[in-house]
Length: 105
Image (cartoon, rainbow, N blue to C red):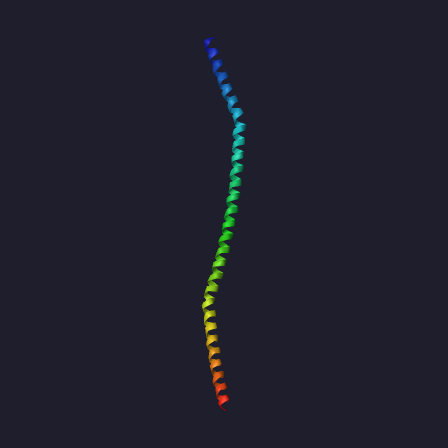
């Protein structure tokens, strides 16, 4: 009799444990699904951030290229303007000489 009662107690305990586990499983399933959703959202966010950063990097590289081109161009422009100024000054000197000559005559 004692043995049977012990076995009954053991089986009841096991039944209680299994019921608890059964009750827990939906929660665990919900938790895992929530976690999966969160991770997917996080992955989407990171991909967006990556895309944004790549675009920003492309934009900055373009701006850098543009500025380098402008920087390269500026010495040429400076040289061109200086040459032009020199040419105009020579021309002015020539015209002044011609004017002087004509006034003498």
